[in-house]
Image (cartoon, rainbow, N blue to C red; front, side):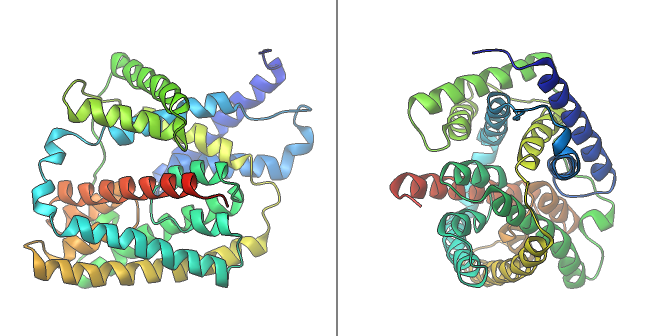
Length: 354
């Protein structure tokens, strides 16, 4: 395979640097998924304003992007530690309820985006995923969904939940929670070059395994399954530093932003309205299930509401800390939601054609 021209490599590096700068700025402002969102915005703006100056035939390297999709898979799989798995007996009622939530929320979102939004079937289905932003985009792209609308709706879901849940919980508890409380909840793994090398090696091996086994979105599911199995059995301990996740988000966000050619103001306005309807419906379902689970178990309602909120894992864990709930249990609920969602997406994508 021929090496890309120097001008293409230079542009890619420039886009990544701009994306990293945008991500850093949003991280200072407390935005959700700042490096993903910041790099997506900067690259989308670059396409909108300067595409006519791009070198002829320029495309963002899909092989490079695939490597970091694999890194995301490894980092998700690495969360399935024996200590986390040991908490599962406390969730004998809430885990089946989470499965009901994933299926119910997804069906509701599909109806909203298909009937109210008029999206095609593939876009409505993958945009309606109640979790797994990167996973839904990766699998949805392969299924022929409109990546612009899919990415927009997934980001709006997270932004709406992360913005609204702390406000709602603050009203419920009577004091500020989440970011408003000044708490800090983020993975603190120090990591070093060896752990980064391990994560990259598992990403490469997992991508190769996923492609060889012909898994749906194999570049994501292969590393996820491989890392999860190795960590759960205690064979390896993956403690990659937080900056590796930031780098992966910059690469993926930049690649996604390059696909935003043709996004219009009407799409943004319409998407925002649909997202608010979708999030309101999902939160209503989550609250209803929380009330049922609380009556059938010893888990408190407020912790369950945070556990069923389809937002970012870090911010939901932050809110759990603020209300003196167990952040490990909240995080495990969200990991279960992500794993169930990824499994459902992969299965449906394999069984039917959109």
